[in-house]
Length: 154
Image 1 (spheres, rainbow, N blue to C red):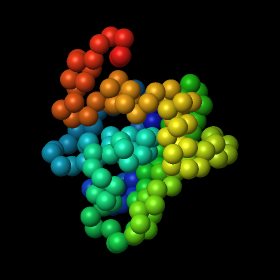
Image 2 (image 1 turned 180 degrees about the vertical axis):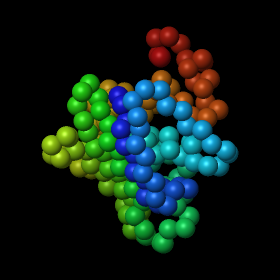
Image 3 (image 1 turned 135 degrees about the vertical axis):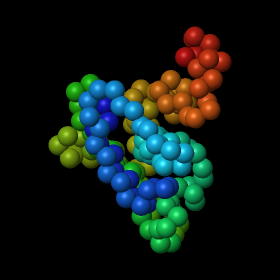
Image 4 (image 1 turned 90 degrees about the vertical axis):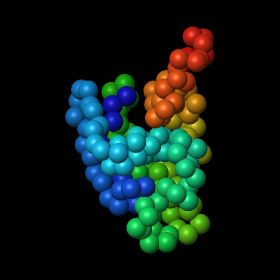
């Protein structure tokens, strides 16, 4: 998988941020509190929803955003030569979650929060949220998850 573009709006410490990722190895550097972990959390939230966030959904929206302002993560990525766009939004005062995945022809493949999570797990990444966090995306201070897991589980 290769992430090409990430767009955040009212997501945690970012009011608005657009990033493009070059090919090759990428490092995310910055002082404490600058949003490094938040970028990674945004990717996980886009793929797997609120359960992948570090906090409850009430704390995902940018502090400076108006009550009910839309919070969103949009991500363009490639898997095995195929391109996709994934958008996850949290809208309104009730914080309703919406999500969709489109292919490179802008055809909607799935359009529901739980449907996107299932499609990611079963078809695109072929791994559950738990497997994703153990093998691809170990959170800060959770790297021991790989060390303490047996080979058959890894």
